[in-house]
Image (cartoon, rainbow, N blue to C red; front, side, top):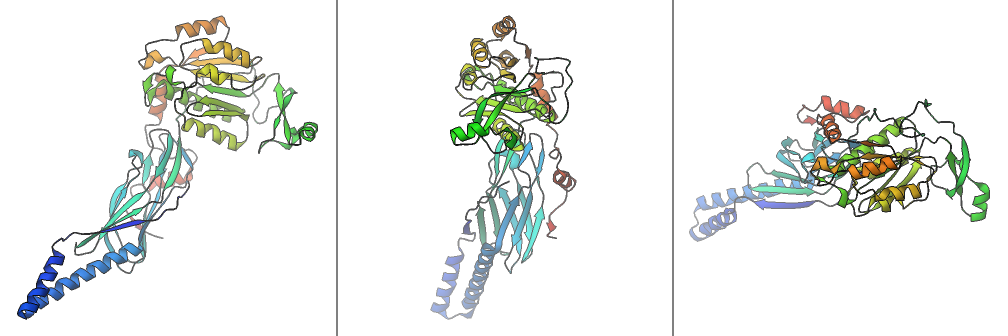
Length: 429
């Protein structure tokens, strides 16, 4: 969650449009006739007008709102709690305050009315249910209040905002048995850090998070910059996930599309790799190219899920994406694609020589596309590349699992707010 600082904008609207004319009229009538009744009307309306103006001015100076989200990210289907505090620092009460969320997305829509005592606060914890992945901004917020006489309406636009990243839903994919020797095998995995059969496979620049034990001091001295060894393994546990985001290959729209299923599958594999203590790399090319080499530090895992949450279709063919990096030795490369043209197979074999290669096929015909993947499946079989067809029902399953509001996994804060969602406005503790 990040708070963005901005100025407030205040507007005062006079609801009784005839009030200035009436005050002027009674003043003129008193001057012309000397009748004390006109003077009483003049003084009464003028005093009421002045009191309303001072009341609204006081609220304008003292009324405000604070919005906080204590989570940096959530997953599709999570009920995200927000702490919303209505503050009145003035010496006069706000008898009614309408709070309207101007975020512009239905997931974050808030509209409520409350009152607040002078120099006091009221707090509530509304829940936001996010049904799609992406980066969301909560705010700005519009407050409307008024004086007790209904003469003025005050509108305050608070441009402060909070941000949250919503990750795609994921599936267990327990039936897919990925192994360094290919799709499936009988080799038993050891949890934690895996002992590997290691040999040097070159060097690269040092990056924050790399182990100091992997620094190649001779190469660092020669290059005058820290360098680390690239490790090769006879049975690598690394996964490279390639996601085909080429717009020309996609079918369907919105959340019912090959693009969305591809993202869900990639997130599911990344989550499984994390749980199995694997190093997972990600490559995708939407509007921008994302190339994240396999690493095990938490910051890298966060970047992988962030890239998937923000992924959009682009104009880079899969063959171009596969040819961007150098050869990957031993790691298992997993290609997720809705493509029907087998041209990318040659590019993959040329660039990823020595690596295990497998494919997850998302058939565009199931999403209303005019072509199926029969030709591609045949080419994969002839090249002895294992592949699995991923049906459209997996996408429906992923979003059906996320269709019921739930607190973010592992979030005690989320569970606490879920229990309090029915509470009305409460005074500050």
